[in-house]
Length: 353
Image (cartoon, rainbow, N blue to C red; front, side, top):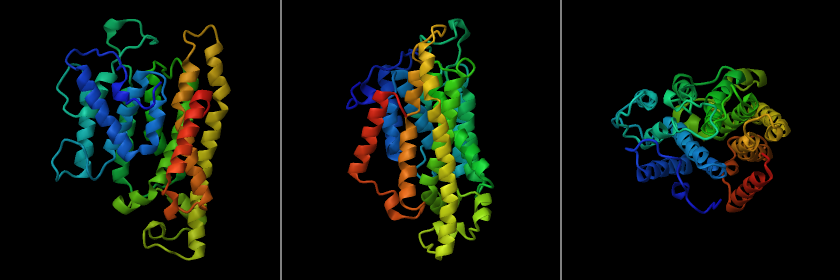
C-alpha cells in the first residue's frame, strides 16, 4: 500500500452502474476525502490503512456523510442559504431515502451519489449468492441512526445522563464502524463478534469526540456535552459558564467540572479496554477451518484502528488535568502528529489497536 497515493487514484470498487463513471466516482470520493480532512482530520489516516478499496471508499463516504450532516455553518446541503438547521437536516433525511430507493433517480450531491453507488456493491465474500435479489450491502438503519443523533443535536441543550450521551455515541460512531464492516461483507448476523468489538469502539470513540468538540459545540450551539446527572453528582453549578471563553470560576467549581470529565474519560477507556480484550478472539476467527473466510479477524482489527486516535486525545486530556478549556489541549504540534501517525502505522502492521 502506498500511503502517499491518493485514495481517489487507487483502483476503485467495481462500477455497477454504467451511468456512474469511474471519473465521476473519483471526483465524488475526492469531495468526501476533503470533508474528512477539513472537519475530522484525526480520522483521515485510519481510512488509508483499511485493507480493501471498497472498505476505504466506504469509510470516506460514510465519514463524510457524518461530517456534513453535522455542519451548521458552511453546510453542503443543497438548500437555500436562509435554510434553518432543521431544514438542512430534513434535506439530508430525504437524501438518504433517495439513496436507498429502488431505481436510479438523479442524485446531485457528491456524497449521496457516492453512497448510492457503494450501498449496492457486491463483493466476493458476501454471504448472499443470488445476484437477482439485488441485495443491499450497506444497511440503511445505520444511516438512520446517524441522522437520529443529528436530530437530537438540534433538540436538546444538555444530555440528561451519561447513558444518553453514550447512546448518542453509538448512533454516530458505532454506526460508522458497522458500515465499514458491512462494506467487507461482515454482517452482524453471521459475524456477531466483530460487530460487538466495533460497537465497543463506537462508544469509546463517540464519547471521546464529544469531549474533543465540547468547546466549539457549546460556543456555537449552546449545547452541553457534560450530562446533567454528572453535574449534579459533582456539584457543577454553571457548566456553560465554566466552559465558555470567559469562564474562570473558583478552584472548587473548576475541580468539580474536571471530575465530571474524568468520569467520562474513565467510561471511554473502559470500552477501549473491552474492545482490546476481544483481539485474540477476533484473530482466532481466521484460524478456524469451518469459516468461509480467513480474513474477518484481521479486517475487523483494521476497522478498530481509530481506538488509537481516541486514546491519544484521552491521554492528552488526562495530562492537562481533564481541563477542557486548556488552550494547549487542542494545539498539537507536528511532532505529536507524526508520533500519532507512526503509532497507527505500527499498529496496522502488527494487527493491534
